[in-house]
Amino acid sequence: MSLYDLSLNDIQTLLNDKPFRAKQVQQYMYLHLGDFSKTTSLPKPVLEKLTKLRLFQPALKISKISSCDSGKTEKFLFSLTDQYQVESVLMTYSNRSTACISSQVGCKMNCKFCATGQMGYLKNLTRGEIIEQVIKLMYYCKTNDLHPISNIVFMGMGEPFDNYDNCIDAAFTIKDQLNIGASHITLSTVGIVPSIKKYIYDQVPFRLAVSLHAADDETRSKIVPINKKYPISELVDTLKEYANSKFSKRLSLEWTLIENINDTPDQAKKLSFIARTLKAHVNLINLNRISESKYAPTTVAKVDQFKQILLQNNVNVTVRQTRGQLIDAACGQLALQKT
Ligand code: SAH
Image (cartoon, rainbow, N blue to C red; front, side, top):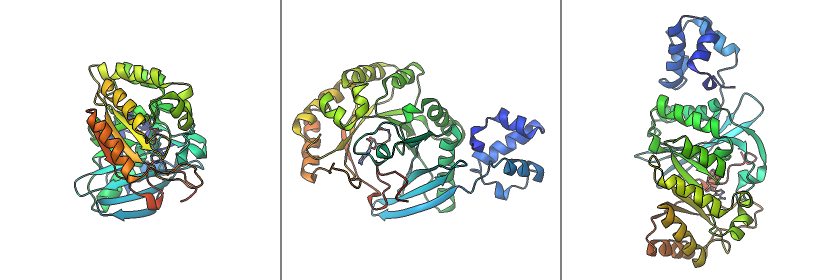
């Protein structure tokens, strides 16, 4: 459990002190990014109580750092209060910083080209464990003179929509207490249809990204097994509902290009049709190879050809640059064992 799992009321009950104490604690948690070391206003017994409950943890350990021309990518390893560990990635540029955070330790989805998918599922992160990743990365930016975090993406380990309530709860806290606008927070899902329906029903204000990766069931089921449960037609119908709802923001479709699997002109044409129907933006990324995998990235020429077909079909597309490959911090490379 993390201090960030507690609501103001919980803290109040725990401290059994004057109401303003709980508010003070909350200020340290959010306004001062959990830096209680400099606190002069909190009495010692309050601090001791929190420490005794193991609600402070020197959890953060920077595992590997890599730099590249356009910015810096750093991978962080968090030790949780139980035996588990989880990773987050910070991407800093001169004018913005993005925190890529995890929602689970491991993942149940078993996507064939993803390192997390191959390690299996260990546990859901609590709301507090999700928030704490952001707090620690924000604190790191502040104390290292890096651009403050401007964007949050739930694209680390795990499937956010398989841990829906904790992720949505955490995202609201990040928006409200840490002042990151709803359109700067993105939840990425492999396409868990019932959770997407809930997301629509709840009118959740954050951005939605869907990892499509293939435009027909035969291809998609090979690399994204959950497709057998929620096939493309069902997924796309649900996303149409999302796109047509009044509150929705522009949808993103994620597409990891894998050689001889989903890098063909035929797939690009089929994707164009889906993207246009959903008025979605497509993010292409070439595969980051994971060790012992039979899947390979496609060629630069094929990335470009795929992109051109989308453009010819009037689809907005961005080719995402792979970052952090050298430190196993790139998309799909978070799997703990290499840290
Ligand atoms: N489970 C969520 C979020 C985590 S993964 C989801 O599926 O969306 C974030 C993105 O990285 C997803 O689009 C995922 O398919 C992609 N990804 C996974 N492994 C990858 C790899 N080896 N190379 C490139 N992208 C990868």
